[in-house]
Image (cartoon, rainbow, N blue to C red; front, side, top):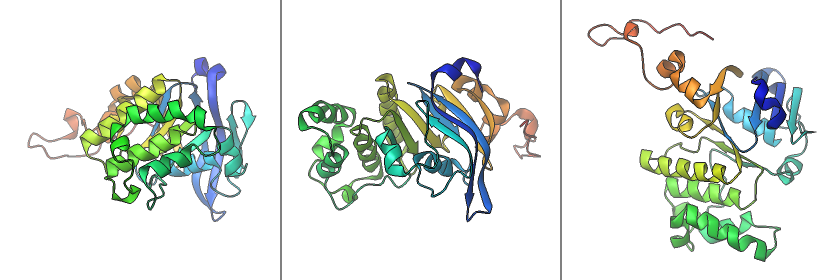
Length: 265
């Protein structure tokens, strides 16, 4: 881990092991740190364990992790009930967005304000409407009738209304058209500038690295590479495996790929 971040880490994960059915390892001795106020991206292919990582932090996997330590704001939170972890300011937006589809946009947003005083929520509601103007025009529309991009915007907006200290998002660009995904990520960048720490997992490495400050490459339940977003974007292995920028030696003059470059991790 980078030493210059250690004193400023909001979230610290050290050597966690998460198992399914007490015998199938999804995470193997995984460690990472998330610095307060930045955007951190965890990249990797399907099955790498990215979603499991977020669910483990959020306390959504019973009796997990089996080993290791998770600290948030200096407090150990591993294996705490999910409602306790959520009350500390960790808000998780799942891959399926977790919306109440039969409720309207307005009703979904109001649920994000549950438990807060009304006068404290007015400015925040205005803020999310400024981030995603379409939500105001769709206010009385059922969530299930929104487009995929609009549903993702609603999920992020509702999460922000819970005033997170750490916002965790699972594949926020999944299934979205490129322009819509860019709109969502531009909003996340604006949220980060406002001081909210963001941890996201993505397969779209190019998009994630365009907004992230720091990133981790995850494969088979392990972190295999880490660095600043710029460092990862310039790494040859990341370019070939995740950004689609294969080197000249990897292809024949006719464009056929002769072999896959050996990874250096």
